[in-house]
Image 1: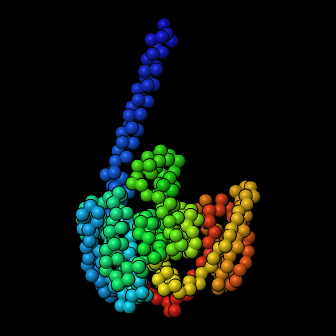
Image 2: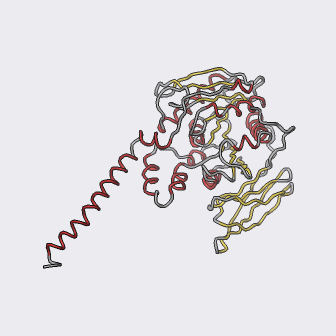
Image 3: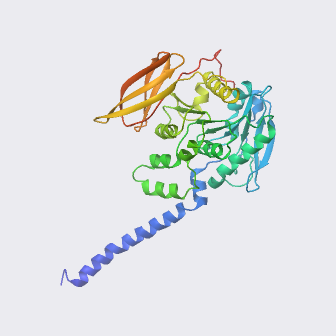
Length: 377
């Protein structure tokens, strides 16, 4: 008879089979996504060919190699300044290789900063295969190599761009002799995964985040122990979310500065669009770290926020600015930056309303270059 026990069993079986297939498929996807080899292919995008060297910008350099903890030879360029006041190792971003970063060597060496540019395992001329689990080990090997090359190993800073920012945070934590930390286009790995994949990709993002090699820039940055921190981020960055950088900045202890560049996106826009003020700010920061010279940038003494309803918040900040024209920036969970420009020199309290929950408040004065530089390329 229609609707009898046999018919019910057939319907239940018809429902169970596709559900079982779906469950098996999801299990297979989870298995694939939890393998390191898959993560390496999914998240790292190296290029082997070196298309240019620092010679195109008349930067003196030496081809160097050094071993990481796995015994793989990492390749790079050591670019010595003529009269160095210190040195910096740059942990580069994801796609490509070090030939994208020769502008940094050009500008920094001119400011008296020797530079080590190197490629991670599997990138450029470095041996081995791309490896997420080896990134921090590569960064530590590069730092140690630079310490062996400089006249004063106590005057070494660590810089990271994009992917290199969590690497740099880990290196700074594990090498207390690192004098300062610079992060451009910083991000938190889990934050970016969830932001990129959205609601539908949340389960996949969760699996990847929980099976990635352990790296926690929020904890690492807390261990700077009073060493200076400079963060640089474009407010139009669509690759690494601004709110992730804001969260990281808020975890750090002073002295710290966050320069949110207006109308600027991800690498290589900060250096490309600010070729006069970018290197000037970084060199001034490093002279502060290495030589204890003043770094005349604003200081946020305290900030508070109050929820007003309708997605609006009121922010109140106490700021001390040694010079005028500081830009007070409120970074929000809506991935936006709201500015209060041209603050006067001295101490003041500023109150403003913003859309979205405030994550951090910062202030910076873009330095004026001595003379406008054109792109040296």
